[in-house]
Image (cartoon, rainbow over all chains, first blue to last red; front, side):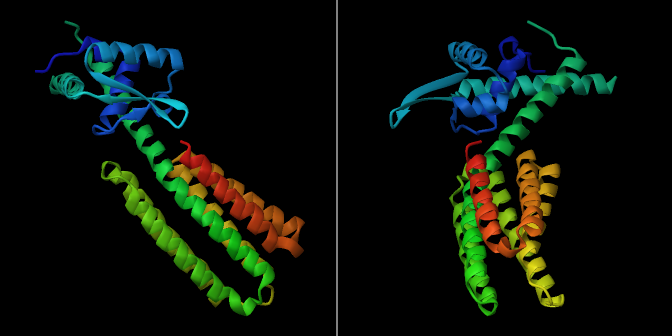
Length: 99
Length: 187
């Protein structure tokens, strides 16, 4: 059975990982990630930093014209960690249903 | 190592599903936005034509405009990246739905008696407004707002300014659809 990932299990980080996983490797810019996760700027930024430090998320900063843009994408490590965490959650539910 | 209860696990899985669905909906809006903008322009030109041209030319004019609209819709749907297959599929379904809608409205116009042209001017606005409202209720809420606005604007024009209904629908209907497209694209 897979293990629970303490880092991903935090509610907002779980949403961030789910939103990025749905992009299948493509980066998501900050305003869209904010809209999908329904988080505040500060909260989203701080949890993205935590995920980046863990190596789960890659943050890319650039400019579109004169406007700064921040984009985030799952790293291969993050994708695997998310997959494993989802497998763990499913296993917990299936184990409870089997009782 | 933490352990997660069944209740927590179910909640987390439901949250993942909700986030994924929300992401898909927003992506669908972004791809549908430019398509709606195109149809806003088509709508504007069509109703402006109805206000200025002889009724004998209306059918040909709408045929040409709808042809341009469908071609543009297919081009825009094809431009959606492969990673957004679901959204591209949604755009394709949207254009097929539009084709069915246009066929329905043309059939109504062909079959019903034409003593008064005014109801036929209002029919597309009411029909498209209704379809978007239903789409919004079942799929994505922004479509419902667009549908209700179009429906109410068409009725308002029909009762308040019947003599200028075509111009009203060109500006309010076409402009409204275009702005709705801008709104969807920004999602």
